[in-house]
Length: 250
Length: 123
Image (cartoon, rainbow over all chains, first blue to last red):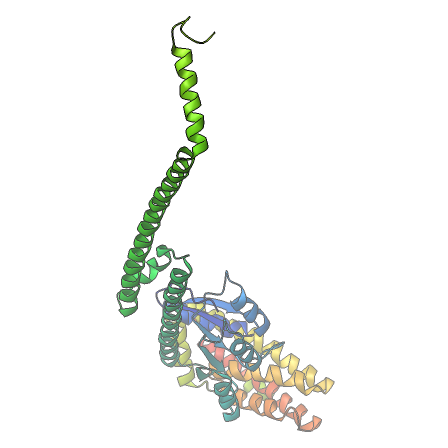
């Protein structure tokens, strides 16, 4: 499941119930309490909505057990098998009131179980408790994702592909991870700057080496007997050409 | 006048209080919910009758379950109890027994509807 926070300060609750009367009652109550709601009339539709990125920002699911096509147990199992939905808190809210059903739901991963008809105060308390759990889980996921960014940055630094902007969001944190990111970013920037300076020095040295090599080559040529002989002949020719007319050899 | 036309039932006050707690101070919405209950209950009882006639326990259990839930929400606990019995026995009870239970539910319903209409705002 997508863990993006929604705009509702109270959270967004999905109501999955095949009875319109039940959906309307739950929707009515939750809206009065300030929650945002998403309604689904059966399990197949609920799973499709939860997996659809544009509608999937749900914090808690209220799930009926007895529904056509796909019952609440099957929906719950499918959610727990799906790594994107497994962490979403599910509260079973149902008129199935045998103990076996309660046990089965909890074993399948439901966070809570409420009998119908629901008591408003108990429902609110359980939703709020689930929201706290969901938010803690979201924070944990965000933390792990940002720890991943720091380790990726370390690997990128080693591979020479480091970009400091990848750590900007982590560096904004006020906790120890944020401090680690800031220190790492500063050190990595220094390492990169030092590396750049060294590269510049190497380039300059290379130019000097090339110039020295060229000078040596020139010296090798100009110091040779052949070059000296050519130079002597060239000097003689220059003298002849520069001598006044009539003084030269006819 | 038949029994079901004269019988009266008491709706469970605690359930009605819970329902009012859910709905809030909105008589119009509460009236809508009572009307929805009446429409649903009639359809569900019809579905139960059809399922018994067809000898189909799967199709009997679901409407019995839903009507049980609705009746509990509106405090009609006696009818809710009958629906619960039908739901639980749908698989292994004889056709005659199930038919008798559904008939009792059908007979019990008019009194529930009258009681609900009596508490329905605006009635």
